[in-house]
Image 1 (cartoon, one colour):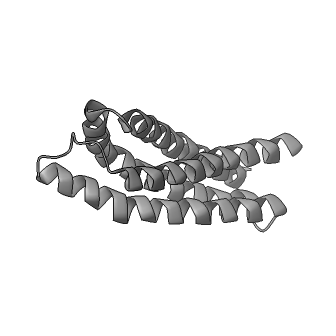
Image 2: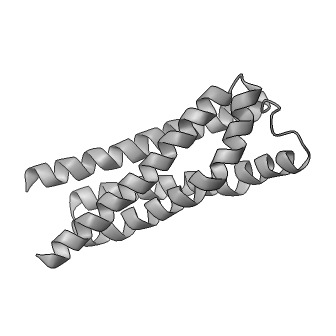
Image 3: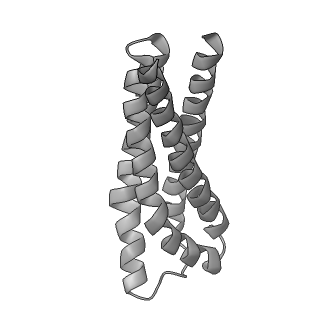
Length: 145
């Protein structure tokens, strides 16, 4: 019973931390598409949200292993987590360094190039589907119990 409680607590905590941060940065990114103000705000905000998203993702992974095990829902969750991690790697190691470089150069308020915006929009779609799909699986799993 304690093990089940801790598993669900870890998983829920991961969703709260990670999805909260994802929502904040996704909204900033959406507003930044055509606004120099929001572009700069996104650059500053991502320094806080990026580690929170990774913490949330790790907690979801740990909580999922203990909550779902090798169940069918678990396998779907692990697939979503793989996509979330790959997406996070792209954002952390491609987009984030680009934003930080621009900030150092005093260009953080300059709207991002269209080619990068398209990649970020595709990333947003994967992010939205995976994070909210994971929450849906979590609710579905607990609804069936």
